[in-house]
Each structure stands twice: as C-alpha cells, then as structure tokens.
Amino acid sequence: MYKKKLVIIGAGFGGLTLVKALKNADLDITLIDKTNHHLFQPLLYQVATAALSPADIAAPVRGILKKYKNVNIVLSEVTQINRSERWLIADNHKYEFDYLVLAPGSRHSYFGNNSWEEFAPGLKTLSDALHIRESILLSFENAEKSEDKNAIESLLTFVIVGGGPTGVELAGAIAEISREALAQEFRKIRPVHTRIILVEAGSKILPSYDSPLNEKALESLRKLGVEVITGKTVTGINEEGVTLSDGFIPTKNVIWAAG
Image 1 (cartoon, rainbow, N blue to C red):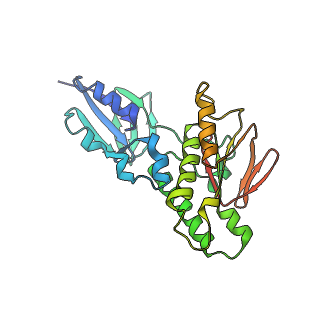
Image 2: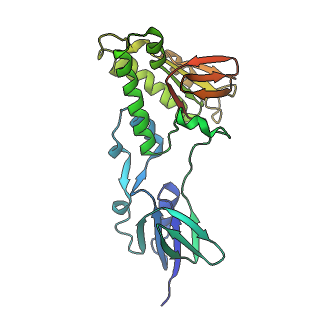
Image 3: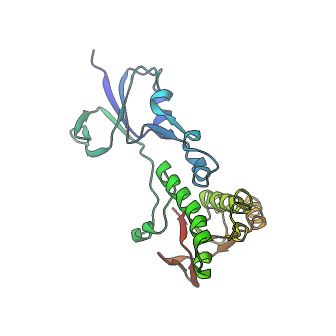
C-alpha cells in the first residue's frame, strides 16, 4: 500500500517537534538537514565564551529519532525545490514528496550591509560559536604579545551589536571570563580591564521583554563592567572598528547579535 511522502527540511526545534508529533502517522517521512546534530541554540553563547563544549549543546539526530521507524534521516543540503512537480534536489539526489515542510532555521541579517559579516560574525551555529570563541581567546593572546598600547586597547575591546537576549548573554559572559576565568592567566595584560560594549539601536536592551526585566538586566551588566549604549545605530564596521551614529570605537572584536 502506498504511503504518502512527507519531507521535512531542518532538524531544529520545529522539524523535530513535527516528527515526534507524527510518530504514529501513516506517512513515509524523510528528514533532511545539512548537519547531523540537533543544536540547542539558546546556549550557543556559552560555547562561544568557552563555558561549555559543543557536545554539551548538540545531540545526534539519529540518536534522538532512533525509535521512530517511519523516519528516514538524510545528511544533505537542499539546493532545488520544484513545488509544482513535488520534488527536490539534495546533493544531486532527487526526493519526491506529497507534503513538504520547511524548517531550516535562519541566519543573521545585516540589514543590507552584508560586507560587515567579515568583521562582525553572528551566532547561529556551532561553527559560528567556535569561530567566535577562537577569536576571543586569540585577542587576549595577541594583546599579551603586543608592545603597542593602542593595539592592546583595540584587542581588549569587545563590541556586541544588538541588545536582545543573545547580545546581553554574550556581553555578560565575556565580562565574566575576562574578570574571573582569565583574570590571573596573563603576565603583561590585565584582562580585568577589558572593555565590553553592548550597542542597542533602540531605547532599551531586551526590548521584547517588559519592565522590570530590562532594568534588572541593565543593572546586572553594569555591575559586571559592561558599557551599555542605547539609542545609537551602527553605520559602519571594518577591520579597525565600529562606527556609530555619534562616533567611532576602535576594536578588533565585533560580534553581531542584531538580527
């Protein structure tokens, strides 16, 4: 007997939730993702700041769904979809479907300024987190080797663009590692003097949350030594630093958490 075919693209929260909801459905389900793990994105910032290892927030998709007998898992990247004829191409293999669900997640947006990504990486994947972690730790190492005062200040300045949950968490975590975990690790530089700046274009951080959560978060960040700038937009980012609507911040470390 023919079973209707459902193809789900993406093994994130949406894709996995749907698969689990259909565990007893009379469907032939194919789950396609370009990675072999499910990622708990809310804790990516802890991998980026070396508080957790990648394995702590990523679980193998096959392990999660090993008891779901109506699901075929495919490690692949979809490159073409034909909705009218109901097929798609993933790594040169054709998959036909009766139903198609797109749940691939998202990438960060630079609001038309894609050239900024080279200098201001975002945080959406494990690769992003590992890249940011390496950059953070190398900045301290390079500052330790430098004899140039301006270069040291630039290396020990971290600018996080975007005052939503990711930006707030990153700013706090970088402040904690610089003032605690790394405080006694170097001989020439003083990590406790690291400058962490959180920039939010709106009037307050965590704009999607109601008071008093915003005020509490702001108070906590300031206690950690984070400089919070609100009401200022980023107008440029390059290898030398960040240009705001009212000035320039020299830095070698910019992290994008604005969208």
